Image (cartoon, rainbow, N blue to C red):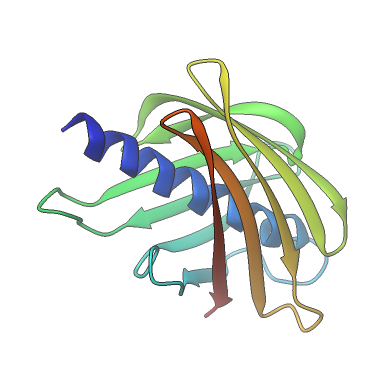
Amino acid sequence: MRSFATARHVIVSLAFVSAVGWATQAHAQFAVGSTWVRTDAHGKGITMSVEACCNGGLRLTYKVPPMGGQPGSTLTVDSPMDGTEVPALVDGKPSGETMGVKRVDDHHYSAVVKMGGKPFGTSNGTISPDGKTLTVESVMQMGGKGEKTVETWVRK
């Protein structure tokens, strides 16, 4: 059970961090209220919706489908999108995870994920020039070593 919980946190973290690059752009290029779908093999079925919140920030809501016989879950993050560390809620409850996201420019961002106050991973995202695809490269600490992943998100 512990490994599933850790895997779910990693998936949820990656989902959030990858989406942040796009979400930063929501104010400039896309309407708040959009939905994005993660299309890479490891994240198939994860969706993200974006809403305005927190004095100019964004509420990112992820729906993670059932996996390995476990029920699906919802992750919610209310972020000012200025690098401030904020809590991640899983099914409405604190997860012990925080995220600090910083916009680099109109098409790039960087983010730091912490678990229990300790750095857990970093991500860098790039939005395509047409604003329809987000590619995210992340390094998450798994079993004492950094595991690199690449994610792809497509706007619905």
